Amino acid sequence: MSDTEKAPIPRGAEAEGDVSRVEAPVTFKAYLMCVFAAFGGIFFGYDSGYISGVMGMQFFIKTIAGPEATALPSSNKSLITSILSAGTFFGALIAGDLADWIGRRFTIISGCTIFCIGVALQTASESLGMIVAGRLVAGLGVGFVSAIIILYMSEIAPRKVRGAIVSGYQFCICLGLLLASCVDYGTQDYDDSRSYRIPIGLQILWALILGTGIFFLPESPRYFVKKGKLDQAATALASLRDQPVDSNYIQDELAEIIANHEHEVNAVPQGNYFGAWANCFKGSIWQGSSYVRRTILGTAMQMFQQFTGINFVFYFGTTFFMQLGTIGDPFLISLITTLVNVCSTPISFYTMEKLGRRRLMIWGALGMAVCEFIVAIIGTVRPDDDNAVKAMIAFICIYIAFFATTWGPGAWVVIGEIFPLPMRAKGVALSTASNWMWNCIIAVITPYMVDEDKGNLGAKVFFIWGSLCVGSFLFAYLLIPETKGLTLEQVDQMLAETTPRQSSTWVPHTTFAAEMGMTEKGRVGHVEHPSSGDESV
Image (cartoon, one colour):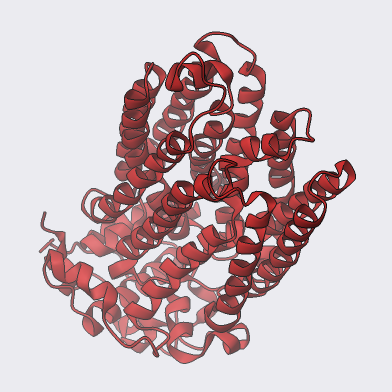
């Protein structure tokens, strides 16, 4: 068990709980810290985006499949694309433990280091085996970063801009995708290994920027509370909020974090290592605040994000547009779709906080479903008509805009908010692993569904994505709660007291600190942490 250190007196909150004093006002310095953390999205997005163009480059095709090849076999495309997702699946799960053991920051830095090793292997590759091995190793690093950067941002961001900040992460993913498309477009005509080595090797730059920058940012104060290091939690929180350590705001927010953590570990004792993971599946699925319900919500939300079919466009867009046969420059069309993604995402910075998460997810799923059914119908009825293909591309762009403003950022925002501190790292890790598992499955099966020598579905595949978006709509309506404007501790209260369909009208009425009597204590030190059993390696 970690020795709990003393922290200064929490002041300023009345015994009944002043819900307006649970967080300091947002300052420019605090905002910039959170914004930089979102830079991790470029790392993730670029790595996801460059492979689509590389697999369409003639020099890369001949290097991997032989000098006579004009296209990669479906099996090669499936393996090269999906192996990264397999690595990220395991990386995300491992990161769930590391984030609780060594901290959020150092887990992210470790992920950047592993990723650089994987990129080096890919850059040096001249065969299928080396490129696959490199993407597997890089995937482990991406798994670390993609899971824990969301956790870190959600824990340090002020509640009033948390949705916008995490949406900024999705925007950086889109920027990464756009940068990858631009680099692919610029190197596609090189008739040597530069055509694929430049897009691959450039990834190291993003990892170095992220890893170096995160090193100079404060650790999450909620991590220190979980470890019982309350003095360090107060110092980190003061740095993040740009307030003095003895500020009433810092003391009140710290008291609320501690009280919420005590409440959760008293309700669900953590036990040993395996018990801590088992706790993620405890409780009743019919109880909104139970751990198993939150785990299902987070993992299913990431599953449905993948079910929208968005990565079909970004992983296989170039080769899909080639197969249509009526497009002169499929690389350019892929670049345009990525540009739509980038330009649409900033809208969510405003709407995520103005309209809320739940409303965006519901209407976003409906809009995507309509667009995808239209694309499928046009592609089925008039597949060889140039004007019809232009209409398909237009509706694909509208569909991408719906995704970029709703489910793209929304799924990441919500999974960072719904888990209580004792299981937050593991809950976000499981949710992220779910995203990558379904990402991997889709990457494996898609070439077999659409390639001309396999399933040859072509545009008909959008019937599948549209139907799955209908499922996303029902899921959002029935299960996604409204979390805008609430602290992470208030989200816990909301889930316990209301249902998803009524959550948008819920208003905070007390604090955990008041309910546990911490506002009346002389100190917040000597807090016992029954969860400390899960801290031993």
